[in-house]
Length: 266
Image 1: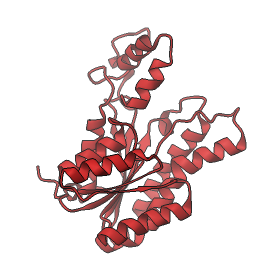
Image 2 (image 1 turned 90 degrees about the vertical axis):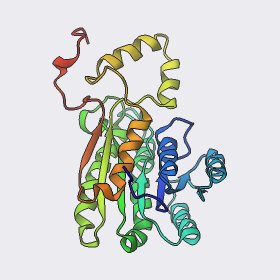
Image 3 (image 1 turned 180 degrees about the horizontal axis):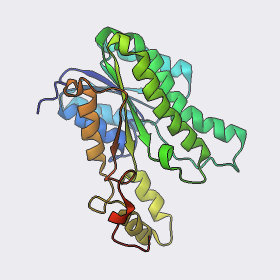
């Protein structure tokens, strides 16, 4: 299916994670469809990703940005528009489960909010005039923690709950401009960061097996490619009448009956 993304300018925040991360995978998938990814991230790794895309004939751009800094976020949008003259979609993908819990300081809690939800507001706010011009759309990457809780991560849970609230608020607010706003909710996805966390545990392999068994569909974690493919469909005009939706790409983790889990000891 042609997603009609060729030549579309798609801004992706949190897009310079390690190879195989959700943001990096979304960027690759966009390039495969002929879209022009605009990478926004604080990690210098993004320069290398942009160069790799240029070697493929994709005129990509990376703007190194502290996504919690309003001035830098505005500057990032300005640089993208200066180069391309438009923005067709925004994918807010920043997310760090930083463990800022009830025992954390006020500053740690607020820093978690700034990174995990305020950055979404900033990018959307500064990109909005250009989304209005293109009748573009917004996709927010969310987390199951907003719906299920996790324990020990008040900042991240509050932020991801806020992401879902903003998704619906923006869907209502921007209908008059023909702008859609949706969210993808992720549960357990095997990313480089997840792999690194498992390797810090003395029984990481056993933990991985237990997590896999907790996922009803195929007893495995969601692949980054599966999230990216859904993201591309949602931001494309093939999803032209979908707005205000929370799309769970999670193998049934959140909603399906736990009786489906074949290990009753979990």
